[in-house]
Image (cartoon, rainbow, N blue to C red; front, side, top):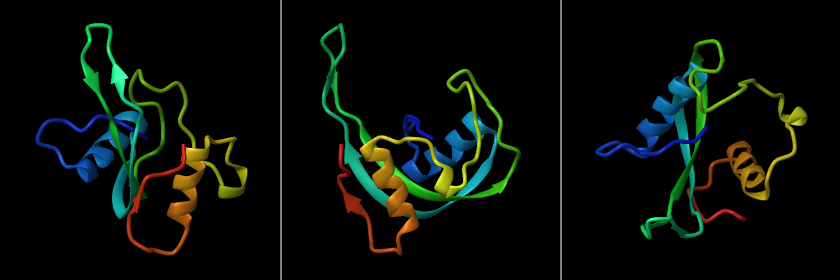
Length: 110
């Protein structure tokens, strides 16, 4: 799940909103895991930005997972040992979520 933090919105509220919008599920945030930064971007008009990625561990509360908007083509649950191939960054986030709590991590592997 990912999404843009709306003006005035907290990142932990963003992930709850995005889970509902994108997958039609209600979640609660269990833990804040990490913050990471993407490489800087330059848009065609010359504007520059850099995105922060906040990583949370969430727990499903209610709702049947299904595509909820035009940003996704498929939504499904996976057993941990049946996860598809992930990027190094996404694998690191999964490993953090499964590890015992130890505080937030600044920076994930790219």
